[in-house]
Length: 268
Image (cartoon, rainbow, N blue to C red; front, side, top):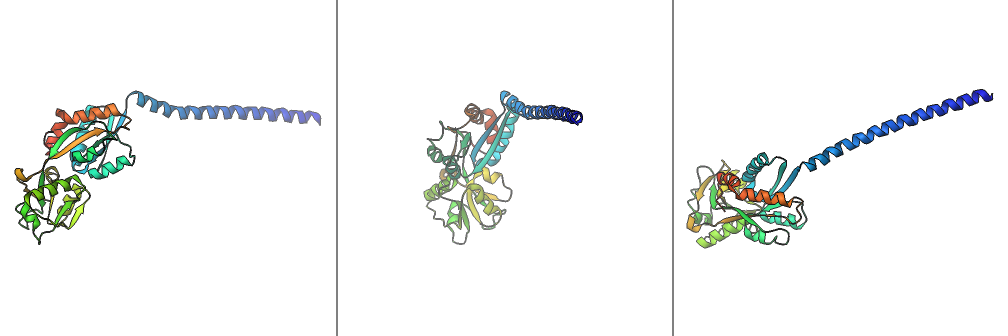
């Protein structure tokens, strides 16, 4: 009886030993499999792969998306991600701790309010206002004075939005009192209302009007117009401050200016 029992014990031990060796082999392969992607991530960092997060005024949407594509082609290893909104919304996001590397607003007032969160600001472009109406101008809007008509549905950007402040400045200078049917959170929303026929007229930037074929324009005379200034700055919390400064410098230099000018913006 004792003999068979000993042989069974030896056989069990050999089986357990084989299972342990197999388990160690599987664990070893699993560790290798886990380390390979980590090594790949490390090599990407060593190669300098960088993602810059840019918060920008809504009126910069088309121009910066185009500029971003050009910049990425010229700067291999750098990717740009954009978030567009009214400048006042961007400021609120930054104060609430939204992660970003660059902020570009449509006025110096909003940027000045972010002085504690950013480095020095650089003006990258300027803009002007225009009146937008439905194609064919069915309501016969001829200029700023007509925006005060009772029979006209006018939409403006809200007073806290740069485009709204600029419009208020222009209308006050002209002595025109407007009662808008709505006040929008950004200039693109104003453009959309007129383009969809929900308003007869609105005041937007020249660049916004140029990007939409669903509206026509009525010029604002140069002597009555306002100059919209677009500053950009690196956020203090940026993880890629040097790359962020390079991008702003590129926007200010000839390559970036070509894109911005093509979109209708004026030189800084």
